[in-house]
Image (cartoon, rainbow, N blue to C red; front, side, top):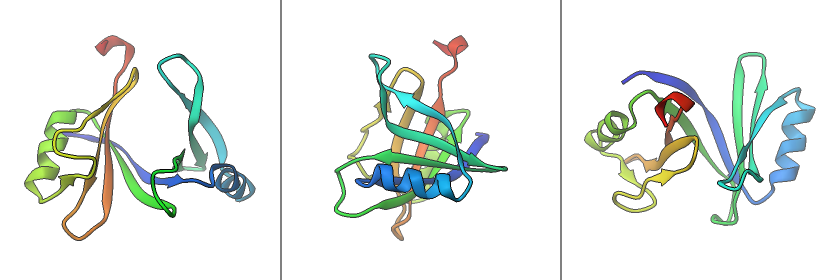
Length: 126
């Protein structure tokens, strides 16, 4: 398994405020995610120099949640690797998020930190 991206990701109910904060720090919007209908969702990827950050709008948590986004070239291998190291799927056993351009799982470590495991799906792989 090869790690292709490794950066912080913030899940928040204060999306606009955080977007403006990081924009004021010099981060620029790289792109917004789109849902299955092609509508821009409440998720943005930002960049400042070589630093990247994801911000995702959600009302799922009572306060902001910061986790690590880890993109890999082989999702199944990455998922099993984390399970073998004591992680569990925070959304429930076997719950995999599948969208047009990615496959993902929200994984929690035994000590409490979390990784959003992702595999980008290229046009060639569809």
